[in-house]
Length: 302
Ligand SMILES: [Fe+2]
Image (cartoon, rainbow, N blue to C red; front, side, top):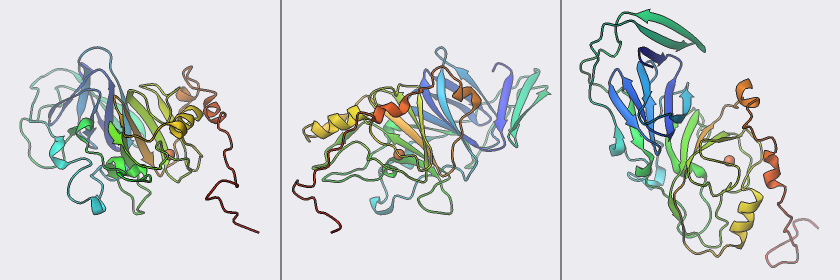
């Protein structure tokens, strides 16, 4: 994007760096991010993006709803999860260049282009609170189970675009960061479930504990509304037989864009050679373990 600039009039952009560094030159200044960091460009803000250290890859969420904000912490109180102090906005930086430039605009779901005679990044100074920002996901202070049982993954919400119905956000941005797993008498990977929210997951680096095979850094998984899912057969086997000592999940960062809206894949994605045709096979190895004779099992009827 040498002389090319862009703004999105339809929504704000949440960019999750996955491979190599990215530089965003915005009307408000310059933001650099690396894998482990995110950048948010508000709706309408003009920018261009450049790779810093070679070809780069990132995930992008286009949010049409209310702007991302921190979730209500409820009884957690004032601190932990993502803390406001760690969100960084750029200092002003401008380009005074009279050069033919292309300005691309996404508006109403369509892309437009116009030519202008200068760089649009000509804002010399700014103040206010509508600005792009970055956040280092490694600054996230996770909160979780410290005795038994399993909180909803929403406990790992970094930011949310809320809706009028609690529990069904326009979109939540959730991460699965490095953390200690210490719960007693508890199956530790995520549980098996169906839910209203559609779950788009990505893996920035490392191995995701619920899906150790077939889910590679840079890949995605998609579980739409009410589609059953949970740990694959190997993750179930490992978690069911492991000694329940404190375990630190290290060297891994997965995330989820969780939205109340169904997700449709593009034709490009549907036909891509990297698409996994046999994904459902990861659960085929699951076996029935129910035994009504074991202690604690009660017949419900009869
Ligand atoms: Fe899920």
